[in-house]
Length: 213
Picture 1 (cartoon, rainbow, N blue to C red):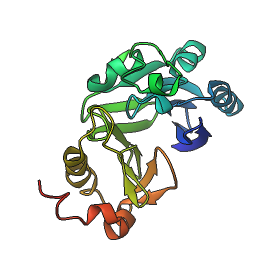
Picture 2: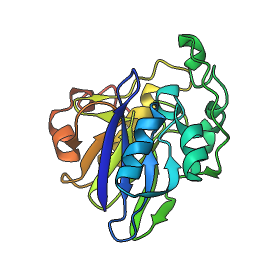
Picture 3: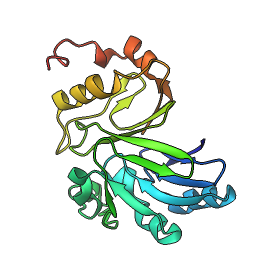
Picture 4: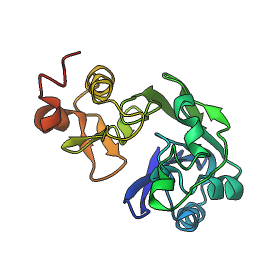
């Protein structure tokens, strides 16, 4: 697997493009904005995009879904609990910043444990609710794409509709912190980290109150 990344939108979202080096088939994770820039990167590397994987439904992570779907023919995939956010500006929060983002309905509803196979590449979906009800992380054998669930030195916000701090910490503790220290974290915002680094140094993971589960 090879990996490209591009920073998109006013919120600085990390959009990732993992792809199979042998077949040049790939996916786009969280195309939050700047669809034309994402498309140019895809075309420059001759990648055939098969799926658009969304870690959750907030506007800053979905803003170029419609454009990419129309231009590549890729299927859009999201957890069922966040599916309405693709077409509802109030639920994806764009209404509140004057954007009114309406994308297209999802083609695929992804549940926990689903394996996405693209070429010789496999990504396993991990349901990590808390930031939103339908939050997902995607895992390869060495890389974990965490969306807005877990960041370097921080965790996702839970003060938006559908957010829940206790559920978020359960997701992180029970589904992410059980992974090997060497697993690399590629978050929705900010810098790359690892499970081991966050286990050791993330201050949000050492609160007894948060882990009262």
